[in-house]
Structure formats: C-alpha cells, structure tokens
Image (cartoon, rainbow, N blue to C red; front, side, top):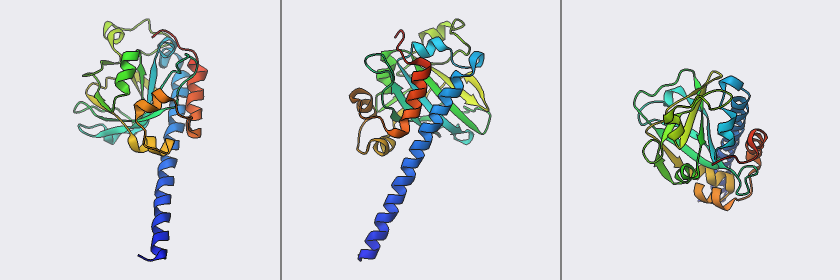
Amino acid sequence: MNFKVLISMAFAVTCVLSAQETAASKRLSAAATTVREIMEAGDKGVPQDLLDSSSCVVVVPGLKKGAFIFGGKYGRGFLTCRNDNGLGWKAPASIRVEGGSFGFQIGGSETDVVMIVKSQKGADKMMQSRFTLGGEASVAGGPVGRNSTAMTDVQMRAEILSYSRSRGVFAGISLEGATVREDQGANRELYGKDISSKDVITTQPPVPAAAKDLLDVLSKYSGRAGKS
C-alpha cells in the first residue's frame, strides 16, 4: 500500500469521525431545544413539579415516524442526572431507544421523546447497558399541565414518565416494551474514549462543549434537586 493511499484512507476516516461528531452535537442542540420548548408550553407541557422532583431526564430528539414499527429503531438521545450536591446536571450519557409494541405510531413527520426518571431506582435502571421499559422498570405516559395534581395511580407508581412532541403538541405516551441501550459509539465521539453510560454519569467526566446548552437549559428550569 503506497503513501498516497494511506493518506487518502486517513483523510476518509477523519471525515467520517467529524461527521459523526457533528451529528452528536446536532442531537445535543436539538435535545436542548426540546427541553426549552416543553418547559415553555405551560398548560400543555411537562408539569414543573415533576421535573423538579426528577432524578434524571432522557431526551431523544427528532424521531422519524417511519421508525415507529415493531423491531424498528426509535432514535438516539441522551440521559443526564442531577449532580450529587443537588445543583445542576451531570455530563450526558448517550442512549438508544429501540423496539416497542407492534403498531406503535405517532402522527407527524418527526417526534421528540422526553422521559422523566422519578427515582434513583429508575436512574439505576437507565444506567444499565440494556433494559426494557415496562419490564425491568415501570413506565407510563406522563400527565400534561402546570402541575401533577391530575396524576393517576398508574402514573404515581411508575418509575419513569414518558412524553412525546409532534408538530409542537406535547402528550404523555406509553413506551411499554421499548428497549433502552447505551450508545457506545456516541459516548466515544463525545468523550474521546470508550466509556459506558454508567461511568459517564457516576464518574462525571468533563462536560463536552456541545452539551453545555442542554445542561444550561435544564438548570434554568430546574437547577435544584427536589424530592426523589
């Protein structure tokens, strides 16, 4: 293999890695926008007290409608949890949400998903390399409004509450049967090394510059830890 071929291959690899990093950065930016808009939705958004009492938040932006079929991939997003001192949020771990019930469909050409992780038990499940919503962790569509007074018994018992946004409309949605996996490739892109989602959350590596907007938005709307 001659020198010119080696140079061409190195350039191609660099281009691929740069494109992947740009994609992760774009997802982080879209995740920040999703949180910002869902918290500005007032009576049509996630109740403030639920966000305040959450242990962690998952944001999966820009899911395509065509992916919502049995065995299909829902999308890629991020998990972030509160800092140990209760102030602000930790560097995000990359996750994938896949599979789910057959026939699961959401209207609109693009859908965002937000999950409110209510307890440390739910957070521990989220940090596993793979687990099933509704199997290993109870999940329910979350209530919409300024506060959570309208929660049902099912929602109150659930460890995770899930929401969707399609064409600007937020609604609670059940993700029963969906699988959450760590996104090892995206973690490598963001942190420059192989690192598990659990290690991202528990060891608190330096926050990637691309993640700053998402963490700032979460801190703006819920900077202090509430009940767990």
